[in-house]
Amino acid sequence: MASVVISTVTATVTAKATTSTTPASRATSQDGIIGGANPSKYDPKNPIIIFIIQTGIIIIFTRLLHFPLSRMRQPRVIAEIIGGILLGPSVFGHIPGFTDAIFPTASMPTLSLAANVGLVLFLFLVGLEVDLRLLFKNWQIALSVGAAGMALPFGLGIGIAYGLYHQFRMDSGGFVRINSILTGFPFAWRFVACDRGHPCERQGLEPISFGTYGLFIGVAMAITAFPVLCRILTELKLLQNPLGVVVLSAGVGNDVVGWVLLALCVALVNAGSGITALYVLLTALAYVLFLVYAIRPAFLWILRRTGSIQNGPTQGVVALTVLLTLGSAFFTGIIGVHPIFGAFLVGLICPHDGGFAIKLTEKLEDLVTVFFLPLYFALSGLSTNIGLLNTGKTWAYVIGVIAVAFVGKVTGGTMAARLNKMVWRESFTVGVLMSCKGLVELIVLVSSFYLPTPQDQRADFLPVTM
Image (tube, rainbow, N blue to C red; front, side, top):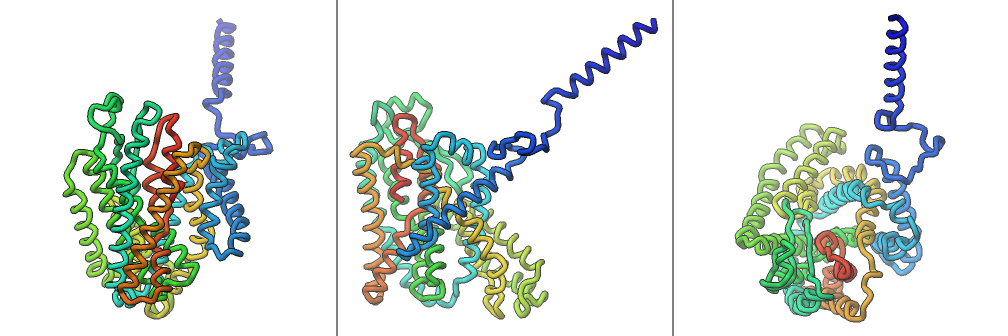
C-alpha cells in the first residue's frame, strides 16, 4: 500500500514539474540579447524596444538628410518626408528583411499613435504663436485667398478625375476598390469607381457615380496641407508676419471646408443625405463659439488665480493646458473634423500677456519638434511605394495630377492676394505657400486607397503626387 502511495505522489510531482516547464506557462524571458533574444523582433507585450529602434533610425536618418537639403534652403519637413520614402518600400524596402525587421506591419499602430500625439501638440504650439490681432486685421484677404485657392484646384481636380475614373475602374479586367477609414470620421466606408451593374457589385462593394468620385478627387486637390504649411511657416519665422498670418488663416478655413466636403462624400457614398456635412459645419462653428465664450474666460480666470500669466505656467497649469488640447482634439475628431484643428483652436485662445505663451512654448517645443514630428512626416513616406508606378500611362496621370494640384493652388492664391492689393512678390509667395501638399491629403489617400493586385500602383499613384 505504501509503495502505491509513493508511486502516485511521485507521478503527480513529475507531471506538475513537466507542466510548469512548458512554454505556455513560462514567464516572459528577461535574458534579453545575453540569452540570445532578437531585439528587432516585434513583441506586442513589449513594443518599446522596436519603437526605440524605429525612432532612432528615423531621427538620425532625417537629420543627416537635412544637411545637404539645408544648403538648398529646404525646410526640415522636406527631409523628413523624403527620408520616410527612402526608408519605406520604395528604396530600403528592397533590402531583404529590412521592412520585416525594422518596420513590421504589426508595430506601425504604435509608431502612428506617437506621431499623431506629436502632431496634435505641434498644432497647439502653432496656434499659441499666432497673434489674433493680426488674424482679425487680415481676415478679408485670408477669406478671399482661401476661397480662390480652393475653387480653382477643385474644378481642375474634377476635370482630371474624369480621366482617372474611366481609365482605372476597369483596368486589367478588375475594378478599383477603395477601402477607406478616414481619419476624423467615426465610421468606415468602402466604395468602387464603377457603374451599376458592373461585376464589382458581386464582391459586396457599393458602386459610386462619377459625381461622388469627382467630388472626392476635387477635394483632395483643393486641400492645403495644414501641418506642412505650419511647419514651413514656423521654420521661416513667418507666424508673426502679416503674410504668414494671411496664409495660415486661409489654410485653416481651407482645410475645415475640405473636411466638411469629405463628410459629404461619405454621406453620398453611404446613400445618405448631404445634410450630414451641414451638421458637421454647424457643430464645428458652435464649438468655436463655446471655446471663445465659455472655455477661454474660465481658463483666463485660472491663470490669474495661479499667477501663471505673470510668473509663467505652473506644472498644474501645463497639465491643464495639455488636457484641454487633447480634449479639444478628441471632440473635433469625433464630429468629423480632424483632431489637429481642435488642438490649434486651444492654442489660439491662450493669452499672450506677460509672456505666458512664450514660456509655455519653451516647455514643449523642443520635445515635439525633435522627437515627435519626424515620426509623423516620415510615416507618409513609409506608406508609399513609388516602384509600383510602373507604366507610362500611370506616370502621365501622376504628372497631370501634380500640375493640377500646383497650378490651381498657386494661380488661385496669387490672383486673390493680388486683387487685395498685395504686391506681386507677396502675392506669388501666398500662392506658393497655399500649394503645400502632403499630410492632410495623405491622411485621406494613403489610408483610403487600397487596390488588389495587379492594380496596387493605383494606391500609390495619388499619394506620390501629394
